Image 1 (cartoon, rainbow, N blue to C red):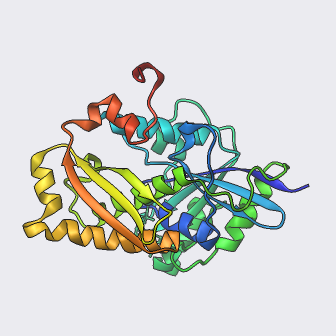
Image 2 (image 1 turned 90 degrees about the vertical axis):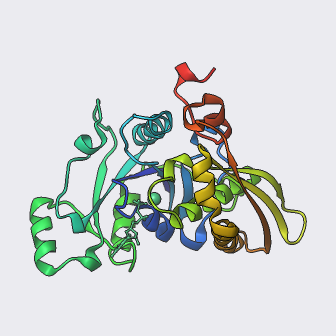
Length: 293
Ligand code: GDP
Ligand code: MG
């Protein structure tokens, strides 16, 4: 009997979750068309081997519910934790401590699923640092998402813990809706890479048009910010920054789609969108029940 199930990856920002997920999913990235819309933001890919299928969920960060967006992100992260068959808890080894997941996530009830602890960035640790961590967390696996060190052992441990089940998804199902979502994430990610820390959570990306049938693929994307000052930052002197973001994002989307892309990128101000339920829904954030109408 094959094994299949949901593996939710959690960890503090900067622990290396995205790097690890990219490595695990790698070129086998097969995008799912998730039936329940609420999981749209979280399924990052599937790793299917001969006898196991891992459906990987990302957690958008365990932040304090201070702003509406952060609250919805937290809810999504918690939902992903509680519906997991296995939780992969990733810790940045360079920090030198292994805080308990329950503390970090401020959980109010225990996680039923088995938790696999992986200490990342082992490539950046001295022998002594590694020893000290191993003493503190004897069950931890040491990995490097960057070099790939320890990843095979990690995947074996994860798949061993999955329930016996037929595969849940075909290996190569791709949905345009999700491709659109990934494209918007790539644009947003690129914008964040090229900006200082002051704007991040104020940026949402919306794909207004996505014409795959033509070559190059035509994509019109809008970066929404909350204030005019942020719009100026994003556009940069003489439009230099938005052009640079557009160029880098286009290259990523081309690599992702395997096709040439024309990316038509705009910046618009949508005042206080983070506190606007309607806008949050439009940008694909799931909302707590009591705020959704
Ligand atoms: P996330 O916030 O948890 O998604 O973390 P990212 O995947 O964005 O990684 C945060 C930073 O840590 C980036 O600069 C990565 O290049 C770096 N990083 C991730 N994994 C490793 C690793 O295994 N070794 C080292 N040295 N750096 C890593
Ligand atoms: Mg990340």
